[in-house]
Image 1 (cartoon, each protein chain N blue to C red):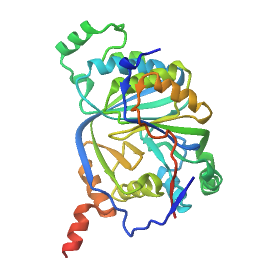
Image 2 (cartoon, each protein chain N blue to C red):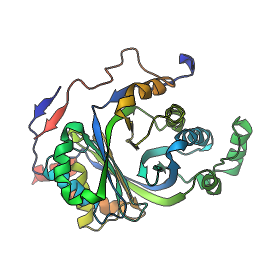
Image 3 (tube, each protein chain N blue to C red):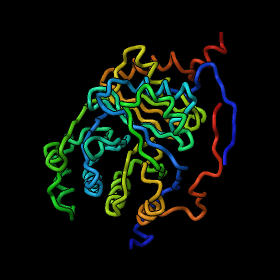
Image 4 (spheres, chains in turn yellow, blue):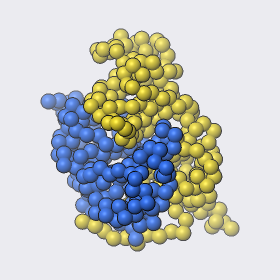
Amino acid sequence: METFAVYWEPIIKTYGIAERTGLCLVTLDLPFHRISDAGDWLIRFASRFDGSLVMIFSRPATPAGLKFHLLLDKSPEKIEPDKIAAAEKNSQSDQSMEMNPAAFERAFPVLQIDNPVELVYFQGPHYGDRYGIAGAAMRALAEKKVPLLAVVCTGASVYLITPTGKAREARKALGQAFSTPETCKSESET
Amino acid sequence: MQSTLHKLPIGGLKLSSELVQIRLLPNSGFSVNEMFRCLADHKINVTMVSLDATDGELTGIGCIFAEDRKLAEDALKPLATAIDMISPVCAMTIFPHQARLLLIGKILSALGKDELPVYGMASSHSALTITTDYRRLDDAVSAVCRIVSLPENHAPFRPEFRIRQF
């Protein structure tokens, strides 16, 4: 069950590099035995949060749990009080885990909110089947000393989360290390 | 059991072949750049990556195919004290998630209630990938299928071919 392919390009191609600013990164430490609680909390959170999820990702954290991240398009703190009141009125669930950061902290041991943060992302041909893509992206940013808060790759997509004000630098660094439709166009015009 | 009426529709569910999840330990003295360079030098594809800098510097996980394990162990010898490996692991990808926190919450809740491990997660704009125990894959699929409805003409869960770059 395998197809062998020869694929080589002098500069790694992307379909374009995009960025988003003004995002909020929420981090929780989640013990393995509380995965179900986290799911239930997300269900309640979904009913009250009037923003959108951008990404969700996690990795194991010592001693026995997950470092769990939500990248949102707005901070949970910014939810209008009347909307919370309306949602709570409609909610059948218990009110022990509300939406505000203090309530998060009561529910789970450690909480960190990085707000605002920025996101730079790109896709490219067969990235999911190719080695060296994530490393090349991180190397490009390290060379330009662009700090990273997180890196997520799945399928043909690469996502890089930076502190506020750094997405543009990251995009520029990636644009120099990778080929984009814009750089291909300018090369063909010269 | 939840009726089809109350299930959340998704476009598909895809399962990986057997994987090994490599974790770079926090404050190990090695950087993720070194880890990825070692793997790339040996042409090892990392199929899913989830890293964060919550502990000060970037640390986290990457998954490789099980057949690359020996090669990866050799490649990562200089970092042997800085990494650990979980295996056998499988990546279960649900698409599209359409940024539905409700869907993701229900999936996590179902996995947790069935005491299925979640070793890592990574989402793109369209898909959510969760790594779990390869030996309990059928249980994980059953848990997810309790809450999602799949299209009638759903493609096979497991890939029928794979591309490898030389």
